[in-house]
Amino acid sequence: MSARPPCDSTKHGVVTTVLLIRHAAIDTGARLCGCLDVPLTADGRAHVDAVVRNGPTRPAPDVLCTSPLARAREVAARLASAWGLDPEPVDWAREIDCGRFEGMPLDRLQREFPDLWARNQAQADDEFAWPGGETYREFRTRVLAGMERIANERDGRRIAVVTHAGVISQVLGTIRGRAASVWSADRPDPFTATEIAWANGAPHRVFTFNERSWF
Image (cartoon, rainbow, N blue to C red; front, side, top):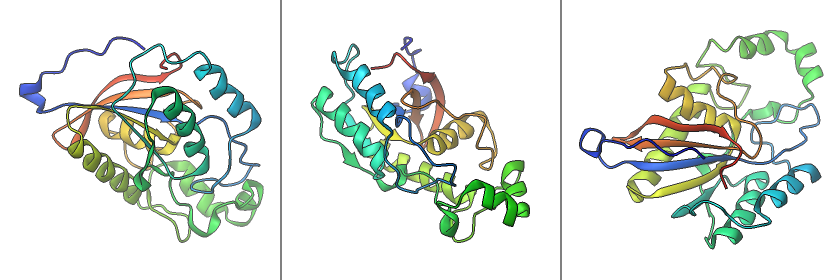
């Protein structure tokens, strides 16, 4: 990972560094998958094993948190063993809730609910939600509120969070001034890390994005 640029603590207050790690590969089965609890694929597990097999090459974080979903918890368990940390489940780090449409085959969704599909694909409505699920505005609010709590509890420390593409996109979208409904612009690849600075109750700087050599 590239060296982090210095932060002016007098300008930004106490800076907490947050390492956002996307879980490894999953197979959604061409289904709508937000907080649907699907496991890692065999390739995803092999990817994690290959990275952590020889031990970390960078300093360990002070704290390791994880989404409660199985695909994140499995990655967090492997990292925890390598780092000598106990993973802490945090509900705010789970993926967006797609409500009653979780697990629906995408071809059926496009065929039977074309208007909903088009609204989501347009990425222009922060109040969009799949029936019974979270709006994008609610999703962003949940993620940022959770990050603020953990940053306040551990201010000035380095926190790692094993989480999901949607969560990371919401954090980066906040920094880059994108609407909450814009979900495709800042999506990281599986088992990569994105490091940001958190200060004064908000994310304010991206140090690295989609970094593969971070462990």
